[in-house]
Image (tube, rainbow, N blue to C red):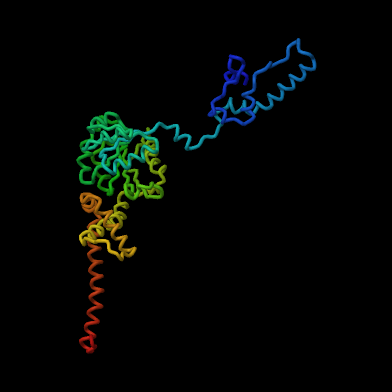
Amino acid sequence: MASSLVHLSSPAGGRTAAAPPSLLSRFSPNFCAFATLRPGPTRPTAATPKHARARTCAEQEQKQEVAAPCRDAYEKPAVWNTTAADSAEAAPPLRVGIIGFGNFGQFIARGIQRQGHAVLATSRSDYSAYCSAQGIRYFRSLEALCEEQPNVLLVCSSILSTEAVVRAIPFHKLRSDTIVADVLSVKQFPRNLLLEILPPEFGIVCTHPMFGPESGKHGWSTLPFVYDKVRLADKGDQKANCGQFLSIFEGEGCRMVEMSCAEHDRHAAASQFITHTIGRVLAQLNLKSTPINTKGFEALLKLTENTVSDSFDLYYGLFMYNVNATEQIEKLERAFEKVKQMLYGRLHDILRKQIVERVPI
């Protein structure tokens, strides 16, 4: 223990240098006080009076009793408790390459950076100025980005351009344990596409953040994040990297929902696609705010605004690349016809009664 404390004493004037807080914080307050004591004689000499020698020995025994538990903690750091968070902190940050750095890609990148990971980006448009201001490495070509060998390659392109983007990836420039993920609003299409095109050793994770720049502008807490670990190797770093990647969204407070791609598309057609469809229909009515808006009408105006703000290509992608979308449109048509029949049926009954029974109008 004496050798462990020598570095705490300065050779100049016998002053004690302050130990780093990160070291002292691991020990008890008694150790901190003991470690910063001004060093004195460690054993009595022959010239020391008998009563002084006894007092010195007693003081040394007392100090040893105080230092004993601290010495055990210092000499046996392996027994300190470690948590999963400590292990996660020990792992190096991921390098996430984003293909397609438009509005949504930038939105996702901010969450990745908040969780301490590095972002590399490429896109058809030039976002070099934006990336420079945000501490993001921007590459003017997909080939140049892949040469940096990111741990995760995240496809943030539109649904309609995804196949062309994936087929253009130079897989030979990537590590064989790279994970390719997507954030498309449909899931069976990218799943099947990635399984078809990617080399068999590449990992595949299909995800869908069920929110965007508008709904997630105040934070991602409690917002659902759907994911499907389609293919991961049992050996190597793929599983660990996948865990780190998903922990980005968990760390942002998302409600993590593990779900197959097929199940996702069934639910999304009945929720997301229907929402966009109703919003598009209402937009055709050219609804305007009035001086006597109800809360329900305000909600319809907001729905129209949110859905029309997305491109029609996105809406078309939700229809074209989800096998359940056609069924939902047919259900919507039947539901509208049923409502019409209910209205006109009642009107028919009233008119018939007025005509047959001669009830004055």
